[in-house]
Image 1 (tube, rainbow, N blue to C red):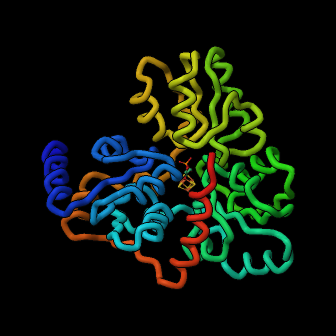
Image 2 (image 1 turned 90 degrees about the horizontal axis):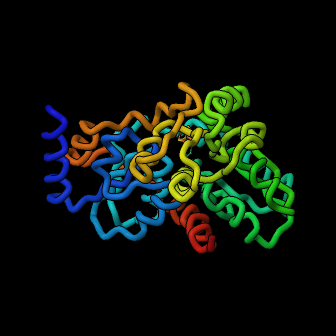
Length: 303
Ligand code: 13P
Ligand code: SF4
């Protein structure tokens, strides 16, 4: 089927099913273009809550669909590709986290949304890259067990007086961005600002002119007087950057900065998902209610 026909059929089915399409900035460009809303993890959770549609088709990775399913239990949440999972979310396990909680009885657990519903259920509060510092600083304790991203943990640690006890997880896509990649790109584009996602290594973030969530990076590039930017995150962001400020230039930090899971969803899969109402993301009641508390606490934090 040609792309134009695929898009037409998706639009028809969306109306028929009273569905809405939410996509992350790392999704394929053509998928972002058919979405009703494109955002970062925080924006996508907030948008899921605002939705009145019966069905949410989530074009991102599994934990994002799961967050929508936890926050909107009366809606059907579909993930067009069941294998679109975030490897970092699988780097933390329940038993290990429970052991960590026993070791630090005075600490609260802050869990990055890039985690399973079961881990969220074991945590006091969630955070995203957009609000991690505010979430940590909002808590009335001195010690925080922070899971699963050690790079985001280090970024927060540098911006809080609280003791951060990190977990040994990381995002493979961001962790493979090296200091030498940044230095090479800076030499090639001396006028460009380097903007980076807090999932990058500390030695990479040290070189950044600005550090922010995906949406924060777009807003910065759009509002900055600078004309060129080196992009320290997954290259899918370039689509959103060019849409927001097409007159500027963006350079992807490295050819390896690609998240394979985020690229698994294409237009065909979105169409099949709407046709067959698949793959439904569900969370067992007990886990859902506990995980929802952690997400609700996060959404209540003002940034
Ligand atoms: P954002 O919340 O900044 O969009 O990040 C999500 C993510 O998975 C980054 O790798
Ligand atoms: Fe997970 Fe990294 Fe992909 Fe984001 S970019 S979904 S953190 S693997």
